[in-house]
Length: 245
Image (tube, rainbow, N blue to C red; front, side, top):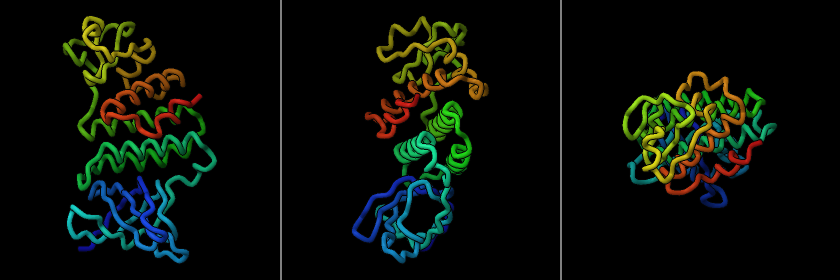
């Protein structure tokens, strides 16, 4: 049966000299893996090889959910036409795509998450400041965690459920899935102490756009540690984000 959907390409792998296997995140379908036959040929019906971070309408033939679907049409619209001019923005976008692929299941639709990744991709190419890119990345990552059922607890102590009152003594524990207070921190070997600045912003995310680069980098490092623990391995693009100056 032929299906149509709006989708963004989040991964590509060469299948043969002429074909590719691609992973799309589609608005109504969710994550889907497809084979694009002949996509690498000079006169490909897809307008050339499929490229990660492009998006548009896809048409695919789906026989069953246990095998690859066959991509029949894809009018590629480059989401990030300006990314080649900014390596930081490109790395942030590739990291977002990697996490989206790793944390979602095939054929599990998340329309809000689809809208969020498209909004993120469109916004990341418009900014030139590293702190703004980090803010956009952090916001998307928190949306991704929420939509996939891994939302960290940031408004109460994730261990004792008491209100977080003292920003000078707050910690993040991935094993506890959130912030922990000074009375509970002794029980968690993986705790990371937050600076007061990071604690203030991570408990008041609506003010995140006012955080400076160092504070945003601290929050991002904590999130990367959290993703690493969730996935039992570090995401491949994480090292490029951690290296941001």
